[in-house]
Amino acid sequence: MIFRNTLYSALAILAFNSPLPAQPELEKHLQTLLIMAEDGSTVEFPEGTFTLSNTLWLDAKKNVTIRGAGQGKTVLSFKNQKQGAEGIKVTNAQNIVLEHFTIEDSKGDLIKTQQVQGLIFRDITAQWTGEPKASNGSYALYPVQCKNVHIERCTAIGASDAGIYVGQSDSVWVSGCTAKSNVAGIEIENTTHAWVWKNKAFDNTGGILIFDLPDLPKKRGGHVKVYDNLVTRNNLRNFAPKGNIVGKVPTGTGIMILATNDVEVFNNKIWDNKTASTAIVSYFIAETPIKDKDYNPYPSRIFIHDNIYSMGKRMPTWKNKLGFIFWWKFGQKVPHILYDGIQNPAWVNEKGELKSGYEICIRNNENGTFANIRADKLGLFKGKISKRTTPYDCEF
Image (cartoon, rainbow, N blue to C red):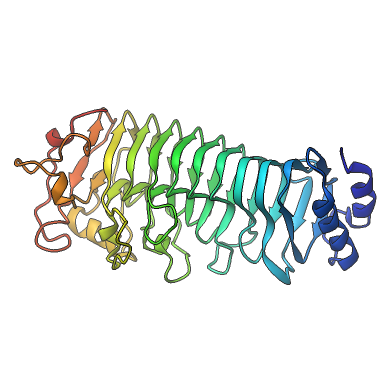
């Protein structure tokens, strides 16, 4: 069943080139359509710019598609939002498709989906307009506690945390997307079995982040592949609100892997990120107390190979502690691949090397200079830096 005719006539009063003030009766009608949508139906939004003041919510539905007339053609603006935080929220659902529209300027997350089994974001632009700022919402596209998630050919702009953020989910594809002008372009957090490929992450603070963080219901992520991406010029100032973990990501970070396991990063072009092209770090680098007894703060089974890094000098940021330390230690010759060297003592053999099953492997990277900054020795960053690659010349 397609609610095309009813919805088109209801929206026609707002289908103009410039947004008009939201009308309560229209919004009520839109929300009613989502409430009444039958399993297997398609709700179509026509071409036009529509100013809305309330979250649109779809709950407990199966096999429903929400479709616009195309990116830049159907525009849902929440610039004058008065109620709710999200632009669109989908919960407790199965096999949901959201596609072919632009969504802008919500108070909080632009699209949040929670506990959805089978989810597709396709050909969506999710953005905050104007200059990037801390008052923008945290996430543009935000599936959390979901399974079988496909994010395809989407664009995310201006998020004060992450443009494309996948949290505590399983079986995820992020492909053909563009993330720009966010604090983090793409973030995979406490998520298992994720493939991130053929995306463009540029002009963010950090391009692609793979994190496991404490104090979350799903404790461990991992089994993540990041490949065939362009990660370049992620040198935007960090505009995250104070207290956010991404607020500690240095301006100029390409790819950061923090406290997770089984991550493979390969065949990427990682260019012109001025502070840390690729960083492999423990949670201790954040210098934040860990209260979660079940949390593992160490990275393991990380394989960085066959990537292309840019040549030339870089200037690490001085406005971030990590960035300043990199500048202090390396000047304008910061190695492209940085490992903090903080290891779980139980994972280390008598030679001081990581045991089989916990390795950090680095191999065959063009211009891929390396340093273990030995943050485990004599206090944070007071140890002698090692540029030896032999202990990390492995694969799995």
